[in-house]
Length: 228
Image (cartoon, rainbow, N blue to C red; front, side, top):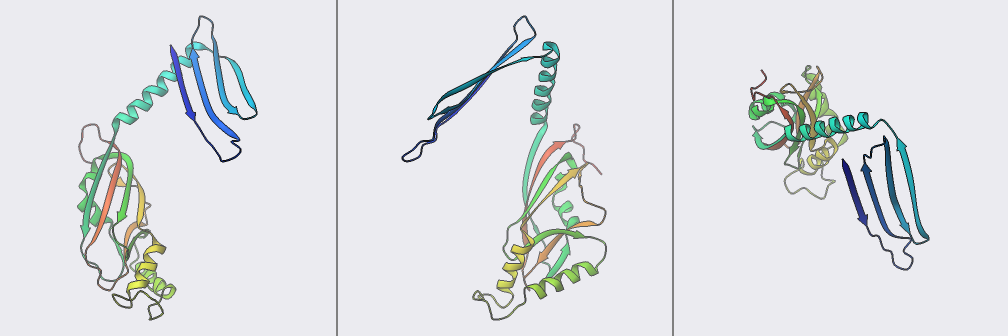
């Protein structure tokens, strides 16, 4: 068995090229003895050439076995990983914070096909945002909206008032709260805490429908059936 790899890169600076080139090579061979010999050439510098040689002794059979398992696991993982991307629209919500977990499941039933993976949610707007917070008490979204309004009050002290007094404060709140979420997916569901829900924060008085792009990456069930 033989394995080799090499990388080269060149960096230059005006005047004094302190590092003129970088190169590394590695070779692995299995002779009759159980000795593994690795030679690396990590640097070629302006002050000369430096190389070092390291000789490692190990059980050849054990190393070959672990290397094979690692390679096979990596290949199997790469082969079983699937990607899906979809853009969907939420119905118009009034200004405030709203739990939308149920709406996402209805709009993206493909989530139920994934055994394990990640979901990225990205809102395609600048005056609404996404976050994760309390999903049980109806007072929490109301208190959150009140807090945001105290932090970023409306008024004529903004330059950008093209669409009303709620215009610029909506942009500030959206930047504070964020435009994307990444959530683990387990057994066809978002792996959320028992009290966690996905929120849409509508920062405009009349925001209209909001579009969200979801990207799913992970391993689907082997028999392609959906989790219930």
